[in-house]
Length: 484
Image (cartoon, rainbow, N blue to C red; front, side, top):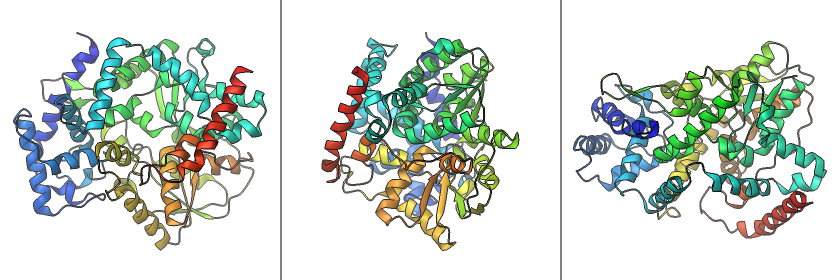
């Protein structure tokens, strides 16, 4: 039996161990910012989940309980309200996994899982996916990059972000891992990060190819076998490269790279994702980008040349805050606050919703609910409603500028703020840091495909029609550079 198969057998015991502590008080659902439930209904839902688990999943699960399972954004904001301190991530991800195995997940989720399972069986090394992304990846870069820069600059930038020449990575090197989603979805942020590291004199290598995916996004959706296989492959590849230090830009990657042991209640056995387990055994240090950048500021390798004279507040990422504290190496969200305080001229401000009360940007609930519900167009946009509350809290304190180091948050809030009329300026932390260092910052350019398919409802906007010519132009221009 493979290590992955052994780990899969520990998921249900870990789920039962978490549910065993649950008193079905419903405090988590009563305090859920996405959809608050009455005390009576919250208790009823949690009682039905508890009974379902301890019947060995033989009892039927009410539809409302399934809705709660698929709507949960697993950001651990409800953790502080639970009298037993139970991790909602363990609970909900475990339940999603079980529903998938029983064929009781929403149709599209079930279809994706079935397709993934067949793919893993036929091609465990993901050769087809890796080859496809080598072709598709360059097409996903913003057309303006390709039009406004020389071919040499474009090629160099893409190759630096992907760096397939692994033989150049020396043992003990500092390895910057942008994450596959950030590399293709938020290339502007990754480019700025590399320019910051270059100017600070950091000797580093960088990898952003999909074959180094952490598998975190699959885990959140309940595709745990796929997540474990992907994480194990990435862990083995990194162990072979033998870097001394890995810097992750994506908070989701940081969670996957630093996941701690989860008790299963079966003797001394614990469940741990293979990626973090392999890196720990290999003695590879993992740091979130915000912590590494703050180290560079403290050591004076980052030098400031400009002042930014405006009040700015930090939006915490759930993956570096609550989820990292509950499931990982600990809360590291304080580092982006320290970075902001270090920038000359900035008037540091705090948002009302901070630390334990910080909220997910909604990327998880938008993705799961859009796919999980056949009536997504009719559902209220829970994530947008939450974003509006956060922004209104900021405006009530006369905060007009907000920053974060999480690319996912920047993308999601960027979409939400457009619907609100852009009452607040939302910055990537890298934009502020680069500007203060004297680096020229170009207007933010997100992926054309992300512009084409915005995640806010309706799922497909009328505006997507106007984006089709840009998408074709982007692909054609990229192919031209690749083939020439």
